[in-house]
Image (cartoon, rainbow, N blue to C red):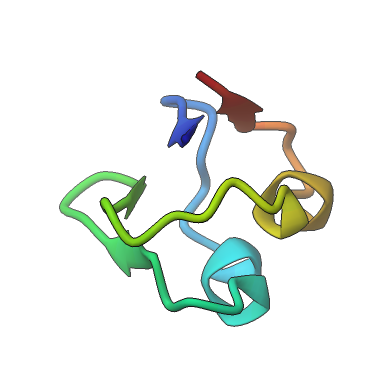
Length: 54
């Protein structure tokens, strides 16, 4: 599963790239839900490098 760090600037690039809709907007950053299939699409879409594999 992937995680999103506090480096997230809430741009939404990851959410729009996720094929399963496993990324939702949280209060201060986007969060990855249990629907994550670990494909890594979000990781490469993030402009700040805030997403990493757990």
